[in-house]
Amino acid sequence: MQGEKNIWLMTQKRVEKTMEMLGLKPGLKEYLREPRRVVEVSLRVQMDNGEIDVFKGYRVQHNSDRGPTKGGLRFSSTVTVDDVKALAMLMTLKTAVVGVPFGGAKGGVTVNPKKLSLRELEALSRQFILELSPNIGIDTDIPAPDVGTNPQIMAWMTDAYSVQQGHFVPGIVTGKPVELGGSQGRDEATSAGVVSTIISALKEMNMDNIEPRVAIQGFGNAGFHCARILHDMGFKIIAVSDTGGGIYNPQGIHPQQVLEHKNTSSSVCNFSGCEPIDSRQLMEIDCDILIPAALENQIDEDNAPHVKARIIAEAANAPVTPEADEILDDRGILVIPDLLCNAGGVTVSYFEWVQNCQSYYWTYREVSSKLKKIMERSFSEVYAIAGERKVNMRTAATLLAVKRVADAVSLKTTRSHCYLDQK
Ligand code: GLU
Image (cartoon, rainbow, N blue to C red; front, side, top):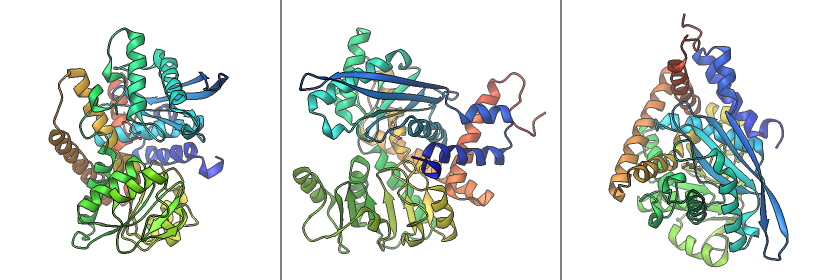
């Protein structure tokens, strides 16, 4: 993607702005702007027809000053190295906002996983982790699921890496099935975190006495679990969509039934009792809470003026462009930014890694209550900074995160040359 739609330039610009506000010195700014390491691999996979195909894969480790680098692996036909760099930087910020002792990384393979057979997908996943193995490790860089990957893929990767090492290494990736050392509650963690931030936002906006109407773009892991949890709490899910299209019913939609329909027909479309809508229309629907839970750049300067929701909860990474941010700010719409809103996923990944390192496993209730505490505390911290500095929640969260990383670097630097006002 070019220009402003390039999420690498977009993320760098957002970070640049906060580094200025914090008064960071040029050297530190330059250091934080660029990734620490970019690994590019060629993956050789024998396809079902016997032919060899080669796929491009990337792993970007952005920053490890607060701990091992952490972040998902994405399988998508649109993956570029710039996207992965941006998403890695976002992970550095995300782990810092919620205060988990990790840095940030991201990986990806340029492939449409839906076009592969199960055997080809397994072969590609195993090959990818083996090619990355010289550069990852339980104490250095720990991958996880992202768009287009799932617990089964994490299971194959854990196995391939463990066979190579000669012993079982469950802590090498997170987001594994529970049977292989995954954490209770990891599957729904991103959404549980999103919901926690929504509840906090409703309280701050004195909207906690209404029956909120919710529209969700994307019905994968994050979108479905957001719909399910909110529905169980009495919220009305009025619209959902996936890559095939969308459905709308002002009376409310039952998420579990939509999932069953999707599992048999491969899309949410044509679910009974609903009007068809497209993904762009969904963004402009009359609702209280809008949850973009799919890909980047979904709310831009064209549709931001028409958004009717009062709260946007970014379950996806980078779904709102900087131009749209300004428009939404002017219109008084509260955007709960990705680096805070969807940080529940990496928070429970941290819990999973801790459990793997200790070989001591927690109950679902322990995981949920620890996650809730971290999400509520992080929301309050970001909300307070937004109020004090009169900035939006994205800038506030970025300020908090960049300051935490900069402070870590500054403590390691013998002659403290990190902040302009420090002699
Ligand atoms: N892919 C998720 C994210 O973007 C989770 C990363 C992780 O658990 O390491 O936050």
